[in-house]
Image 1 (cartoon, rainbow, N blue to C red):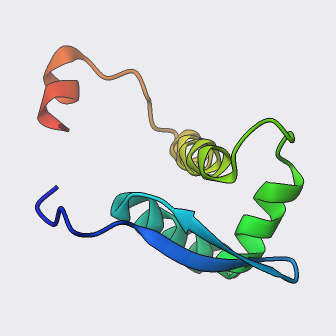
Image 2 (cartoon, rainbow, N blue to C red):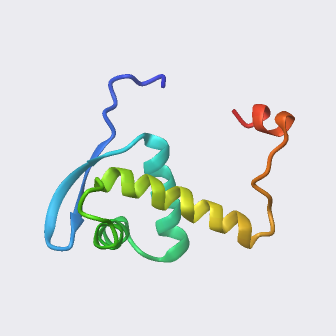
Length: 93
C-alpha cells in the first residue's frame, strides 16, 4: 500500500456500544458499497455481522468473510463465474 501511515481503524456502533474496527481501505470501500446497495448503514451491517458471529471469531475476521460472501453471491446472482482461467486471474491482480 502506498500510504503506510494509514492504520484503517474506524469507530462503529455495535448496537449501543461504540468500538474500533481495523480493516484495509479496500474492505471499508466494500462495506460502503454494500451499505449503499442495501440501504443499511455500516453500523447496522456491523451489528448484524456481530450478532451472527460465533464468540470465538473476531469481528474483523467476520466482516472480511461477510464482504467476500456478499460479493460472491452478487456475482452468482448476475450469472458470472468465479472460475477464472490463468489469464484472467493474473490480469485481475
